[in-house]
Amino acid sequence: MVAYVVQRLAGLAFVFILVSIVAFLLMHATPGGPFDEPNMPLPPAAKENILRKYGLDQPLHIQYIRYMTNALRGDFGYSFSSPTETVAQVIGRTWPISITLGGITVVVALGSGILLGILAAIRQNSILDYVVTFIATLGLTVPNFVIALWLILIFAVELGWLPLGGWGEDWRQIIMPMIALGLGPMGIATRYTRASLVDVFTADYIRTARAKGLAERMVVMRHAIKNALIPIITVLGPRIPDLITGTIFVETMFRVPGLGKFFVESVLDRDYPMIMALMLLIAVLWGFVYLITDLLYTIIDPRVKLT
View (cartoon, rainbow, N blue to C red):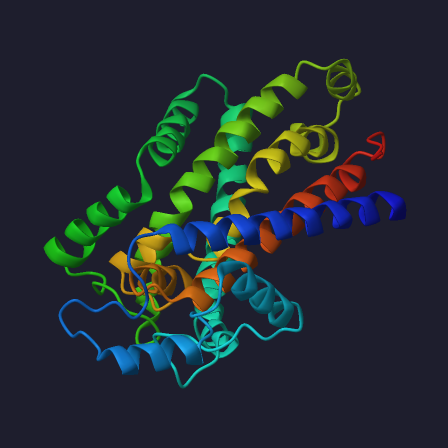
């Protein structure tokens, strides 16, 4: 196990460097620069001073090496858009909001999705099964920004039950972003839980457990759900980084001042230090989530061996 984890961490380091190079090159290949302002052109001397201050007058490979050397020491520099704050301070200010929204969404969406999947599998081909399948399909097929728009029109504009957006002033402000973000993962959890359980229900050991007279609840919770969890974890694990780093459209539409909304603003402003830091953060999160997902396999099913 230890050798496997070390091997995976070495692979993650390689992916981290590869992502940093690709992100850096793409960022600089995009037309326009952070201090190109057609409507408010800077005097050449002032622009030259700014470029020199941030090291943007150096060749690209020098800029990359300097940035990564500092980044590995935890110094991501100052944000171009907010020059009085370091990138770490900006992330520290915005990320907790995305983590709060994403964490609550993960718990609610996955918990309700797995519960609905279990109910649909137990009541296969019943009205309950059809209703649950319809809700899951709706969450899977409709993009979250469309769901967000429907929620705003119905519950904020027409009915006036919920605030249009914002964060931290009214507890109800979290409801619509959470639903818009969570319907997709909930649909995935429901579909895969149902499909996995329906398949497990045909296994010999389930028939044996029922033949012994065990209650259906005990058969599901003690024997079936454990073996049905592996495909669910495989599918849902990669969705978690999306939720805890902020989904761009949803945070923007509901004016949630989280990392996703700030990422959009950084790209529009060509805020190079912020873009690089956010890309590296997301890459690290994805890598660790995949590693944790693989390790969970061995905990859920001891027959799985990691090599």
